[in-house]
Length: 107
Length: 112
Image (cartoon, rainbow over all chains, first blue to last red; front, side, top):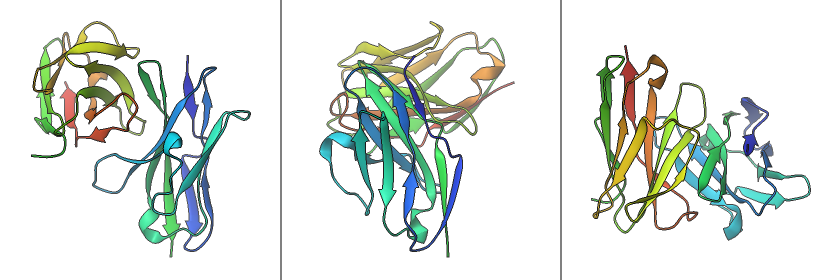
């Protein structure tokens, strides 16, 4: 079965520090990968897609097919980045979310 | 109204009953998908509809069924409710399979 793993349930960093949220996937074809974010008391929302190769709110993610990874990075974390982050894989007509990582940015 | 809206927001049902959850897609979106999110877990894909046809399904039994209507609104039906069906049910719409989904706020279902 196709899987998405996010090894850290909770990640705490200080404001201004770099942050990396890890995501690994298992899929032998060409994956469609996404990061979704859920801020406190808000809906789940799309942060970025690998295919668009864009930077949103300072976050970037690079697809590494060799390592089957799609880690989310930001050079300088802000307190407003504190949220739940989900990595997701689209394949065929299916969609799989990872278990999520809660990012806490400390002042 | 723009955005994805779901109803009801909360629901309590008894084991063995049937439930219907509703979703209005964001304007211009022709694809809708449903997810089950248990407490502390990521959303689990139930199924997806495109132009009123189911075109993707996760690992859920047949008692989970759905409909998409010509106006792209959608329903999720669950028969023979079990205690483990208690969860947040999320609806999401998009303008294409992998364009990125817009999520609703969810329906919290409690089965007692």
